[in-house]
Image (cartoon, rainbow, N blue to C red; front, side, top):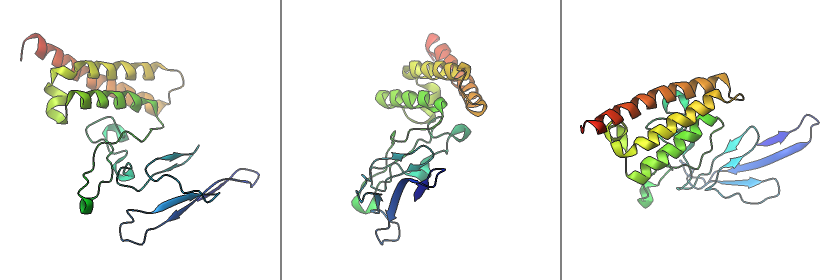
Length: 180
């Protein structure tokens, strides 16, 4: 992959190598200077993102499959590749940094759920121990929705997320108040 500026000068170059296997589990990326890029890190450019291929790299196929086309807002977070031949299970990955601000509150929210041992829709709707995580997500999305530089699409995502998680938070608050 080579990128040029408007003057025709090369600004970035990466070469991708296949490892020869059918699923290319251990391919490599080399930069313009011949340096091997760390394959377990994401490489960000102004208009591009290159994903690693090692077992602990985020699997790009698991991105953007959540609510409203996001990677973190919802129950299907990005996952690592894992490797069944080496008995390495895929797990949640927070390595990918989204380009829209509405998801940053979701990353914090999801980490708070992980810290509390909460997972799945049952905990999302009924676990009162993670109410503060839900309230944080509502607040961060309200802030993003009113921020002047937020795009119309991201503003819509934030408003929808704030409404949904406010409803979840309020139902947990009522449940905690009445002990159910």
